[in-house]
Length: 463
Ligand SMILES: *Cc1c(COP(=O)(O)O)cnc(C)c1O
Image (tube, rainbow, N blue to C red; front, side, top):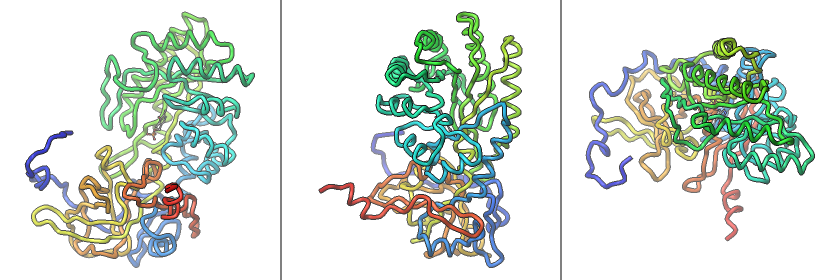
């Protein structure tokens, strides 16, 4: 990104190159089931509904912007992951994608485990009654307080991320009089991107202990030397929004390689490996994610094959989907405030939220879809950009979209696949209160995270 000033030119005016937009969809009123939560449909009168409640009613009762989460879909996805991996593997939901006490209860009821990576996430998990044995603690810089609380509450595993942390967790376990199960996070030198992976000899990032250069092997030595630590396995997480299993294949091969070294050097076969999360979802109709059963089969086959060729017993596998469980289950509902056609460019449609409720477009160049939700329209397609109300031109929700040409102030727009990393990364930028999360199921809508108010903002500001 350039930090220098430059004359207003294409980067500001953003003249669309020929063929920049993909052609408009045949039917702007149609909903692609890959992108929308399971119970979202367009009713005969044109209104979108979720869980049997139409968006006009939801907007009237809960306001906009708001996240509406399809609880039926969330629970179905939990079951699909659990059933796909069966009794030979553990599924840990990555709480950082979106966490609330209601979500923790659903996970518990549907038989999933939970990853947390901060004291706040751990507190939420414990407050909602997740059994500590089913919680894993992650993070590259866990505080002594976070480690102490995790050890004392009896979390099932702590994933070690540095040499310092080996000493800290061992110390906390000694003080608590416990033997703490741990995994070591290994950096395998695979960086996964959306549609490809790049193998790098030396990964220039903050997580884990590198396989290259022997850091991970040294960590294993140090952990095995600490009686208060029980080394249950190795962990590798290679990235996010991955569609290609090739990255997991390289990762599994390298992790199994280290398991083999550990057996040869220390005479122990570690019982578990965790291949992390990162499975992609469809944000637009162009994304084509795998189903949990395909992922389970593929990962299971990869691990079995690698272990067989190394002469190792197949360890218990765990995975950590976050986005792939919660992402597709929610949409954000906005109200259109202004519509500004820019000649020869596109029409800017401003909504009542923006980068404070969805930072992913600005942060990662993420792509989203959008639909006119409060009515069907026969108007032709209009190239549009859905933007927010914040004081930045980068405040974009959906960069390239088609909306019906009669889209007007007062219309409701729905942006699908905002269940993951939207509310959990929301901010108060411009002192905009964060939107609520409303769970909808079988004709009932229930607020699970309430809307922030101006009072909430002023309460933190102690004057
Ligand atoms: C973020 C993260 C996940 C979940 O990633 P998704 O892309 O949401 O599936 C899983 N494990 C670890 C260690 C993570 O940091």
